[in-house]
Amino acid sequence: MPIDNRAARVRDQIEMLASVSEHHQYVQRTFCSLAAKLANDMVSGWMHAAGLKTRVDNMANLRGVLPGNNPQGRVFVMGSHLDTVIDAGKYDGPLGVLLAIDQAARLEAGSLPFDLEVIGFSDEEGVRYHSSYLGSSVVAGCFDQEQLSLKDAKGVSMQQAVEKFGGDVTKLSKDQIPKDKFLGYFEAHIEQGPVLEEKNIPVGVVQTINSQERVEIKVQGVPGHAGTTPMMIRKDALAGAALMIAEVEQLAQKDHENMVATVGKVDVFPGASNVIPGNVNFTLDLRSPNYERLSTFSKKLQQIFSGITQKRGLTYSWNLIKTNKSTPCDDQLTQILSEAISQAGYPVQALTSGAGHDAVAISNLGPVALMFIRCKNGISHHPDEFVATEDIGAAIKVCDVFFDKLSQQMQ
Image (tube, rainbow, N blue to C red):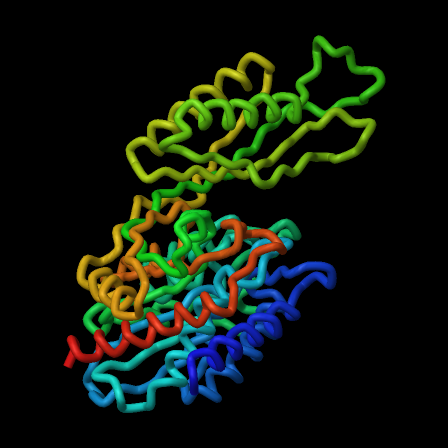
């Protein structure tokens, strides 16, 4: 099939998948939701049509295998995630999965010297449990079992959600790809930034993925009547949390070349207009290309938070949900990808990823490579997220060359 037709098919699949959502007004597919199951069902059909043997594992990952010509051979993985943020765009994650399926459809069973496994990971965004890479960490064998006790906003534990979805948490280790069988991982993803568009280049090659820390902060004060409690004796958790959040922004702005920091969710209890807030929970997302810089920033924030809460008669807890150091992409796979981009007729643009990707977790198994695809105005995690069909075609062209070169080198 001509590349233009393949690109149009992927574009149409993107549109169809975007209709599968937990919310009728915008795109939202969170971990182990009904929408996630419906998305797995839809994409599974496309995997079958591409000749893949499919299954859903115990962490809700959708997995399809195209067998190679060596029964004792290793496995090469291509994929991305099918979950989304709230009020999401259509391309972040799913485009990488659909490009992988397109590649499997181009190839025939037995044509590669390795098995090709296409994976639609169940949770990269970490919306439901504030802990990302749930699906890919199980595949990579680095999943923290203690996370199964985490609870979502409705009090549903991760274990309960997984079991309701059909998974068995006692068998998660069986879903890992053995390290001695793992050959490598390639992920195609929208850039989520403006560099490629500014340089008028459709694709780029990622050198490294920045370090990240996710934290949940709980601030405890004393609730009271809004009309009868004097201002000078209040222990208002929200007023304290507001100062803490302001410090997050101010401290990050002072080191803006090395740090980004985001408070993306705030919950106030009891949440009544006539009651002084007694408890506030908020999330904190820290990222930096330098892990040591990130750690220093994190410790400084904790000192500042301690000072604010002590001065105001409050208490707080710092609950580290997840942390990872910066992840370098593999030299050999990156070289193959760079050669594929050049052979496909495009300039080779090196990039750094400020966003996290499933490649971070999969790197625990072995070598990873990451290709970025131009997105309009660099917008992501937003309904205006958009990738032109021509750029999808460019990505397909590069993927074709990449796998042809990879197959030749792995003979």
